[in-house]
Length: 489
Ligand code: C2O
Ligand code: CU
Image 1 (cartoon, rainbow, N blue to C red):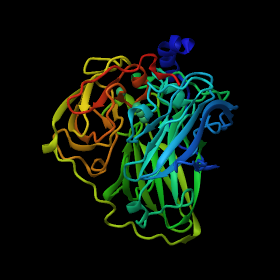
Image 2 (image 1 turned 60 degrees about the horizontal axis):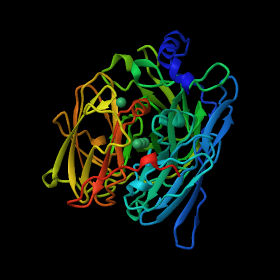
Image 3 (image 1 turned 45 degrees about the vertical axis):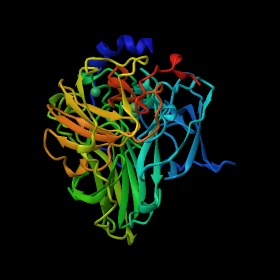
Image 4 (image 1 turned 90 degrees about the vertical axis):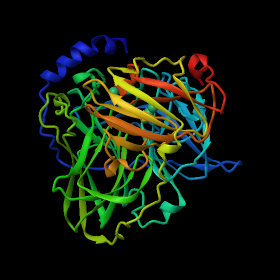
């Protein structure tokens, strides 16, 4: 770690400008897409669904010149897909087998702060942490990843992440593709930088201070992936699991697809579009239609953040990547049309908000402050609806993420949010000169002493302190004190 920190900035900058890399972004789709297995679970004597997750070191050959040392959950890279129903009680036994403290955060999950898996729920090497909660939110594509203070970027980069899918009755009744691994496919997109001997370059320095931007895309840990499609329609659950890179996904032939869900669940109605932009941490569920025997290539286009230096893999040039090839079979099983109405989304009413807060993002600070595990930045009253105004003051893009809640976007630069930002969100890209207003309700789970995080989801920024803490308190109660020692299990 010391070595990495010591040489990171200087050498890292030099390396990317001098590396000879293929900047065309083209890949041969030669590897079958790996689909993370669904996690096994059992029902305990209290009726709770119990999962086991073990963080562990591994080694995988990504075809990058030699084997790569990795970290994963229950395997060498990434982790199984957890799946639970609304209303279920879940328990996850998290065992730390990686030899250094880590934590596991349930990104997008509404749950008590003590179960959240942030930097106050560290798990010591060899220890087990068993958070439990009741799933109480709509069907959604959530995910999990480590959240150790100052070390999140490296832990995620080495491979620790996975999906957490939630189901509910209304969504189960919709004619959307729903057979996991058949026509309902997780697509975890991560850019990585490999040394010529296959080692991961974990130097988190890099261009523009965004953190590492890799030149090789992994999808579910697969380089150059293709997916055999056997149905007319396929649902892709896109997760930007990258440390810093924003993608603008679309198809090489510019076909449109139906955007049916965002971070926190299904949209009211499908949004037909040819592009969907995702910053680190964001998800989108899309339904794509294919014709027999065709090959449809999912690409990522330059995300057009108005920032030259982010335009390219390393130098500001072309930033297009081939992501995934869909290979349709000669005969496709019929899939129903995507329905016109998906799910009612209750609109949070700004008139009911009792507090408006402002978050100025600048450098590695939010409102002029860096993360302090011992400082609670503010307290939210249980049951309150609040408006948060997010304003970016520097030239770097940031991806604003809030724990505990799913929010709705009220406006972007004073205008109505575009259709892709009208559903439930927990993470949002903040680009040049924007002010984004969001609204959220903090329904329950008061605990004056245990904070939730809000932070930039560019993981280097988070590690460098672009994060703060809030607590949810009972009406009339004040914020307490965060646990000292930061809760090592
Ligand atoms: Cu996905 Cu606080 O993180
Ligand atoms: Cu940031």
